[in-house]
Image 1 (spheres, each protein chain N blue to C red):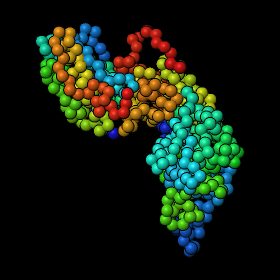
Image 2 (image 1 turned 30 degrees about the vertical axis):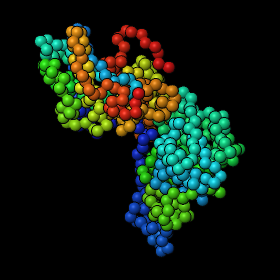
Image 3 (image 1 turned 180 degrees about the vertical axis):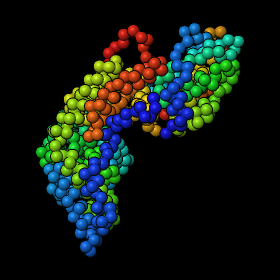
Image 4 (image 1 turned 45 degrees about the vertical axis):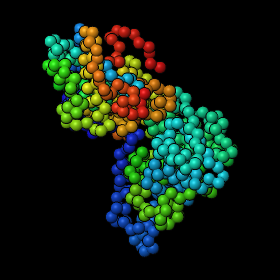
Length: 400
Length: 143
């Protein structure tokens, strides 16, 4: 097939999204016209400072917070690091125990592992086969030494949405700070930090049609948090470094757009997602859906295909113009399959054969049609090559 | 990440399939590691007259299988035994460091098939002296 025949289909919105034209337009003046340093005293600082504070208000409004509780930083990973290390360092005299889950993003897991080397202890809660955390297990895990519970709002790989409000209430009742990595959830799941008992929340603009390299941490007023980045007095003395003003302005506009009509947005995406899921499971034997059947992000479809390996699927799809993702070992330097899929109880061989398709605003029904046309062929070709594929006509046990 | 040669070999692999009357069959790897390579040899007068493969694995594994089988067709068993993973990597125009183990699998699948042929003829196996799957260093932390 020539490149001209390919229909370019981007279905990796969980990795990153394009920057919307409205967002780009909002950012544009802050690159050159309003280029001043917002920390300066002269008039060139006025517009940049206004832009930053307007964005702070937009982020606060999207989360049900107040502007004084929003701190800008470089992105989701920094926000996760700041929340967890910051709470640990500021509260170590009160306790040294953190509760999190086995399926967190590496920005959380690797931070917790680092803290373990510094003498903290961490409980990594298991999840059920759908990737859900049991709030009862969160409660049981909390001890008198626990200073933080960190549970992601929605999983980046399998899309499972966690019972955040219930976990938040448990943490609050026990007097423990609650952090949620909401990098995949903002714009997809309505967030109200008060109603959900959230004390700290991480978000990243490029996951909801904003620019890359800018994120924010919500910190409930009065929460004890050590600084991570030391230097000047930016962000009210809590996060040093000259502000990424265009990025901050873009984040503000993007979160405003992303949270304006979450329900309508989800309705459209979920309809396409469900057709995609049904189409794939119907057309491809020995395939299964990973993640929760209903409590999942509206844009996420994650599959496992027996007898084939994920990177091969990914590259064959790419050759046909479709951009997707996999939790297969072979797509990473570690050669280990996805810790998330393994935590849901998937055996290694099925975790190796996983494919994540995440829909977004640029996708159409025609894109779904195209994937449904191409994917069965790709899986069929790879199964012809695989020695694991049962001989034709031989009945195998159905995948769950 | 991959060379054009690897992508060409991966998207249009040669020698895919099985030989029902194979004289030697070799398989290495495991599903849990994410790679299985099985090679079938047809041998006449100590020379490989036909070869097929089936592989479960990444693009590098499939490309390595295809390239290795193309390289050993027509070789004597000694020549095929001496095919190094470096030969396969070179023929593919290179592999990323993390994927070099796929070329080792190809070499070892060929050697396993040669030893299977020897076993069928009552001959002792030749020492492979390398990757056997677990603990080989080709599959870090897997298993």
